[in-house]
Each structure stands twice: as structure tokens, then as C-alpha cells.
Amino acid sequence: MRFEDYYQILDVPAEADASAIKQAYRRQARLLHPDLNTAADAHAAMARINEAYEALSDPKRRTAYDGVRRRHRALQAAAADARAAKTPGPANDVASDWKQGFQYDGAPVAGRSGEGFSEFFTSMFGRASTPEPADATPERGADEHVKLVIAAAEAVEGAVRSVTVRTLAPDDKGHRAVVVRNVQVRIPKGIRAGQHLRVSGQGAAGRGGAPAGDLYLEIQFKDSPREQSRDVHEPLPLAPWEAALGADVTTTTPAGPVRVTVPPDTPHGKRLRLKGRGLAGEPGGDMVLDVEVVLPPSTLPGARAVYETMAAALGREFLPRAGES
Amino acid sequence: MNDEPVLVGVVIDEQMLGVEELACACGVSVEWLYQRLDAGLLGCCSGEGGNRRFASPQLRRARRLRAVEQDFDANPELAALVVDLLEEIQKLRAGR
Image (tube, rainbow over all chains, first blue to last red; front, side, top):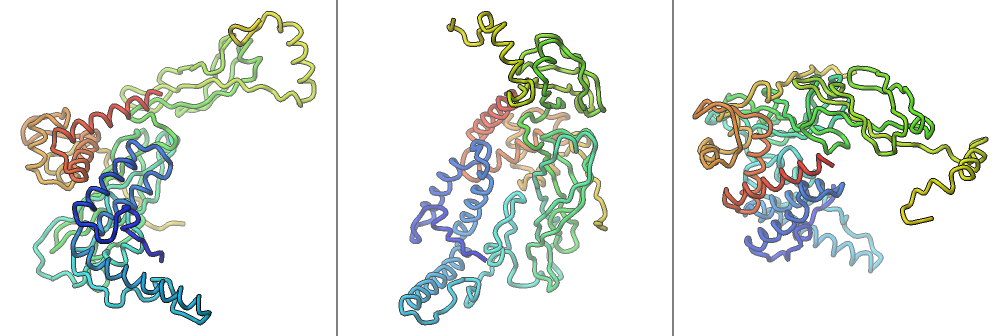
């Protein structure tokens, strides 16, 4: 288990007060917010910032974490001394004994919006220190949210997907703790990106006999920023002669294969829209084909000769770059 | 082979959420929700008063509002402005 230095993550000194920690969190959150930052690792980076802030913004959690951090640093220093003296030293992995003297009696934390926190955080703050009383006031469990990324084809055909859910529930000793479960969920045909699927009773466990919360799955399509639409976008690769002379080609749509008539002189990048051939619904979406003219490599047998013939026949009249003659 | 039962969910645009359900889903109080609804910060919904019904766009917007208010101590109007801009960015990206 890797030690997480939350002060380093938020880029604040260990003696920073609560307001400096909040300010540092906001600064980082603004830079890394996944709605604005399109970097592939923005979600993961934001989850780390959230985790660090969750640990340091709560006085109980911060006190407990500071104890662990002091111990980790002492272990590291002892290990460095032992290395310098070339003698066997203590393990410098905090996992060996970081819980010695560890105390935390606050409420357990599962993570934000289903993103889940690290094993390190969960080990410290993911379990209540006392069992849940049998006469606890009834309270419905919290709803949980998970973003589920699916392929457009799964939305077209429907699918069954396994979803990992992190929720709070009593463990075998009655302590409320983070529980990681995998549930199988049916993705209904025709679901769109941005829609939510609500699965009853799959959120956090209730207290005192109250029902569990629900699980909300927010659907996102793989590699598609075109949310909320029933249109399906696919590339349509064409040979140069098909694009130039026109052709009838077969392509796959959500409703099955169709023949598409490519008109003569179809340029690379042109969009061919097949009305009503996208995702089913009211109204149904379109199938949008983005034409990609694919050139045969000149190393193909005969291809070089064809290109040379074209250059000789058309080189003076066909000028693809404006301003050249 | 996975022996886990396959759970069937409901698309909330087909069976929309009531005020209390939306509040639970967002982890906020019903009062919090009413204040933003009455101020027109949550966008349109169907129904009136306690019978208002909400679909996916309102759920996403309410959760974003709550996150911006909470993370940046923003007042509701400022948070709504930020969420408006985020939604606009999303639309522009979708039109690319």
C-alpha cells in the first residue's frame, strides 16, 4: 500500500491552516476540473485532490492522518540512516505498521460520487471505529452515482455490464465500512449518452432497518463527445475511384447493414447522413457517415504506374493547393 | 460464467424523479432544492409545486450546482452561472 502525502498533493506546507488548505484545494480543483480539463488523466488527478481535501479538511481526519504521516517520515528517516550505515534497518513501507497508535472515531467515508478513494485512505477512514447500534434511528441509505462508459453499439443492441460500486454498509462485525461490490446491470436498448439509469436498492445500506439508497448510472459513450444525441457517427472509408466515380457500398447501422449510394465526386471529409438510421427513439437519430478517402500505397503492384499516369494526365490542370501554378 | 443476478434499472427520463427523490439523489435537502427551483436556477421541469418531475438533465445540473457551491463556497447564482457555462461548453464540444 502506497503512502499518500496529502500535503504534497495539495501543494501546501504541513502547518497550513484550514483556510490555506481550502484555498489550495480550490486552486487545484479549478485547474483539474474534468468538465474543463480534457486531459486523459484529469479524472484521476481530480480524485486525488478530492481525497487529499477530504482527509485534511476534517479536523478529526487530519489529526489522525498527521500521526500516520509523522510515523511514515520517522520510518523513512530511520531507513535512510540504516542505508547510510549499511546496517539492516526498519521497513520503510508505511504499510508495515502505520496503524500503530492510529486513532480515528469519525464517520467512515466511501468517496465522492462513486469515484472511490485509494486503499490508503480507505484503510484509515473507510470503517467506523464502533459497531452500529441495534437501535439506530432509521435512516435511508445514501444514493450512489457511477459514470458508466459504454460503446454506442451497446446502446443500440442493449447489453449487460458489470459495475463496481463502493458503498457504506455494515461489515461482518457490524461496523459501517466501505464495501466494494460488483453488480450486473442490464443496459436497455436505445439509451442515450447523458441519461441516467436508476437501480433501486443498490446504494448505501440504510440504518436501523431503513431501506438502502439507489444506484444512479450516468451513461457516457466511448470516444464520443456528441452527448444527448441519437445520431450515430461512423467513418466511411472509400477508395479514390469510389469517391471519384461514385459507388454503392455496404455499411453497418444500428438497424442492420444498408447499401449506401456514394455520389460521384464525393470529397474526403464529406458527411453522408442516413435519415432515421441512428439510435431508435422518438424521434429516431440519423446515421452520420464521415467520408475518408483512403489512398492505395504506391508500393502496391501497379499503383505507382497509375499515379504516374494520373500525374502526367492531370498534373497541369489539377492543382490542389491554391496559389500554385 | 457470472451467477450474479442481472439487475434492471429504470431510465429516469421515462419515469421521472419527484422533488424528494431528486433531493436524495443529489444529497441535498428538499429546502435546498426548492430555493434553487424558485430562483429558476435548475432549468425547466414538468409539473408544478410539489408535483414537479425531473429528468436526467435536471439531475446532472442539480448535482453540478451542489458541487460548485460546496467546492468553491459559491453562492447559488454564481454556481448557476458556472454550470450554464459548463453546459454551453458541452454543447459546443458536441457540435464539433
